[in-house]
Amino acid sequence: MKWFKKKEKKKYDSKLAEWLDAIIFALVVAGFIRIFFIQAYRIPTESMESTQLAGDFLFVNNFIYGAKIPFTDWRVPGLRMPEQGDIVVFIYPKDHSLDYIKRCIAVGGDTIQVKDKQVFVNGIPFENPPKSQFLPDTNKAGVRYINDQVFPFEKPWNRDNYGPLYVPKKGDVLPMNSETFSLYQDCIIYETGVKPRLLDDMVYLNGKPLTSYTVQQNYYFMMGDNRDNSADSRYWGFVPESNVRGKALITYWSWDQAISFAHPIDLLASIRWSRIARLIY
Image 1: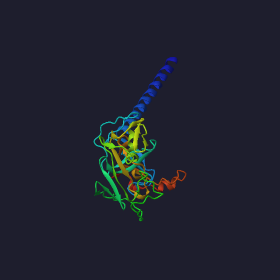
Image 2: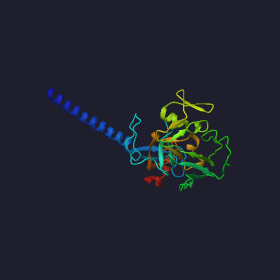
Image 3: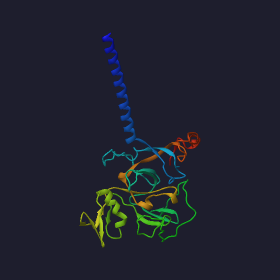
Image 4: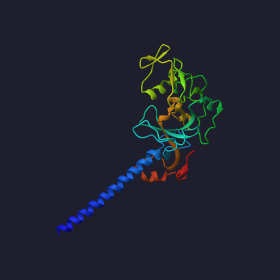
């Protein structure tokens, strides 16, 4: 009888070990896929409507741009980096705890300008996305509106008449002075971790005069398709390449996120079946 009990216990321990091994393996594989290939993401705001709706759940392709290795600044080589027109998920430069999703309007080396709501990149009109949205009113050119705190803060620009603004690319040597300081100081902070200072017409970094700065990575200018209801690069500046996560791939679920889980029937009734398994472009 004692021998029988020992044998049963051994079988039980063996099965438990097998289950634990399977669970650990599954978690490792899932984590590997999430980091390097496909990641789930939820649309929290209306900034991309009607292209993407608040309450859409997406799969994001991390592989195409090259996934970042966790806890490092290293990136796995990807197929390419963001291009004009891509819908990109990225880390919000002003708060690394937040992920944003916007459309890439311009890449490093481009010059962007908005004239009466029409976007121009390098002087060529940027075709408005098919489901982009605009308010009927247009802010006048050359007027900075109190409720329209666009980047950089001293320019007489607004959401509808903006720029021209040059987007930095890797290898650029930017002159640093009182005219360029507000445009590119964030780039220096992102790359060095040190905030430069402007005294009179001279820029200082680590207490030393800085007359020019060589850019270490590419930058991007992002905008929401819901142009007049989007906190985007017009308001907080460029997105560094190191903050890029992935390209929006497919909508796998969608419902009205304004409905509480306390009302499950209403929530299920709000499922947007037509958006499920919808490719994103």
